[in-house]
Length: 156
Image 1 (tube, rainbow, N blue to C red):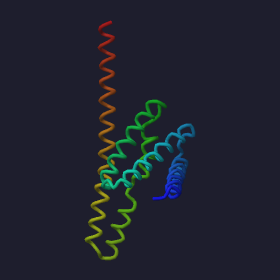
Image 2 (cartoon, one colour; image 1 turned 180 degrees about the vertical axis):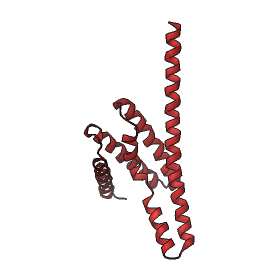
Image 3 (tube, rainbow, N blue to C red; image 1 turned 120 degrees about the vertical axis):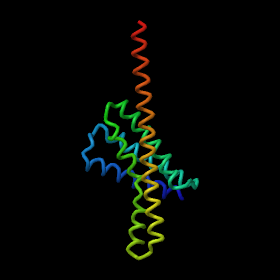
């Protein structure tokens, strides 16, 4: 992939994420951070594609990174995690495979339709699993830190 094509795709990702965020009434002060998460998501996903990682693993790894960035920004900026998570996973949505599965089902090629439909479900499951794992990690660390503060107060 040429560097020009990379910049064109990065700009397209940026434009679509910022438009999506504006349409869904994202607060203006969070818009640049949410867009940053989305563009970084696309860059990581593209890099994993470039080094030929399996498409389901691409979605899982990128989903982990997006969920971690979303939690960190949410705590830093005191905003809901979903403000960063939704624009962040937007580039990961398996639009191509779901389109191909419907296309092949309509054209009576159920073998390819089933293959793409299964791939779509695997990608969606990988994204959901990554978000769940990272949410659980941050929830456990928050519980641990609260417990530590409580025990420190108790000792004082």
